[in-house]
Amino acid sequence: PLEHQHAAARLGAHAANYARVERLRVGSGRVHGVVARDVETNELFEASAPVVVNCTGSSGRRFAADQGSPAPNLFRPSL
Image: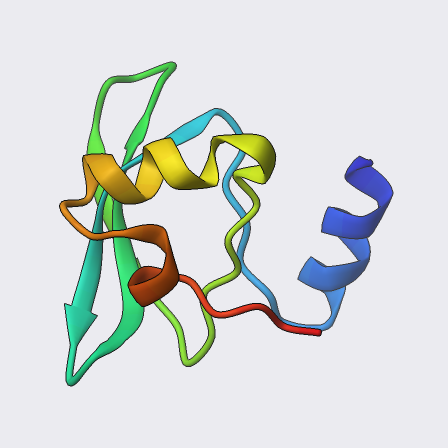
């Protein structure tokens, strides 16, 4: 829900709604950001972070394949 996004923003987080990840920014074997597209304006933007959370759910394997990597090598479970 948006309440989570608003609470995170109050704590200094940045969030983007209506954004589609076009590609991952990977270096030294780690994902360190994304290149995303604002689907309302069609503008590309970059975001980097020490931690990137995969929220693709059941689409994770397809997303990994689109990134040119098998899912086991691209995503590491957090639990």
